[in-house]
Length: 475
Image 1 (cartoon, rainbow, N blue to C red):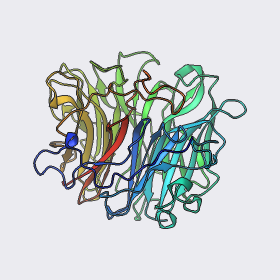
Image 2: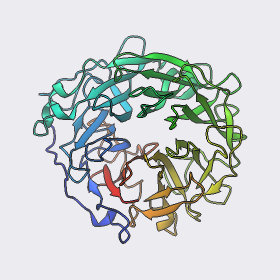
Image 3: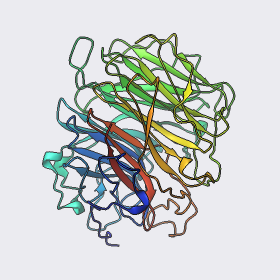
Image 4: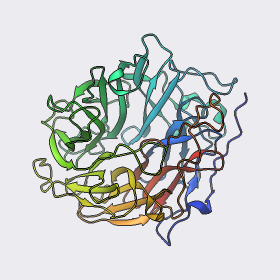
């Protein structure tokens, strides 16, 4: 069938996503307006905050990685489309597929200041010999994009094709933990420093490597040419910690690379969970033993009053002014699942962290935290926050920021009217019926930071399905 007609929703500021007072520099913008869902956003942004590339799980075009970009600081967005090089079909018979896989998702996008390109990574699986699952890398060049030609994915000259494999696994017919051998839930970052200890422009990606034996250690790879070639995989987690997820790589102001993750005694356990972190002082080639940043006394594996999945997640960043490492996770020690934060007591020293404290205490659920840091040291944390609903059902979005390495936080409402994440199912495009019961809000949302703003991207309810929204928040 013909692709639906899409629009940028450039100036769409829905009342249902209003802001509290002067909390934000812009009203929320609806980036997608689809028949099928968009979720699990990733967001790259140029240092001046003007050029942005948003990505998400695309359940509409090709069950791949959806994209849109902005060249005016997020005020308006090009018509949405898909990232080429991953899947072998699209849902438009006039637009051929350009990759070897049936499905792609878990997008990662970061801006590389050395090249001026956006580095893009997507997990891709199905439809090739041996049930391969690969992390594939490509680049997007905004200067070559054609915003008036979404049917041709902005013109393939904007993309480096074919996409390059970072690592390869096999799914054995399933994408669930020990049933398959595959990389999962990857995250990336760029070394933007140019002084001693740095590798300017180096792209790092880390992931959980489900190894087919019920274990999921953390691996990392890096590239010095925007993902055209790779060093790795390199094992990050040590032999004592083999049941892991939520790998997040970050680079400190001295060039030290950190990877945080959640660890448990086994794949199904919620006992003795902990936030772990390791560091590398040689550009990711060798890693310290993993240190415990914080225990997680009462982790969650599901969310109350929801059919969509969610639970305890871990994320981290580094204060670019002090070098302190800040780690955030969510836990039910206070009663409701809330976001907690801790940080190193000495920059670069992973042996001692401060006692964890709630970022924004609430009797309602908070989930999907994501951290980023601005060059001036401000730390930005975005998460879904049901504090706007005393019944603990509707999801709002909150941005909490810290200017003292996570010791104290100031919170601002990105949205004040919540949405019910079970209103729409995340249907598999043109396969499941419109009233499908596959409820899936994703596993994370996104924030990118400059000294002047935090740009947030999240999933909310559109008119027909789950859509991607964005807003710029003044510090």
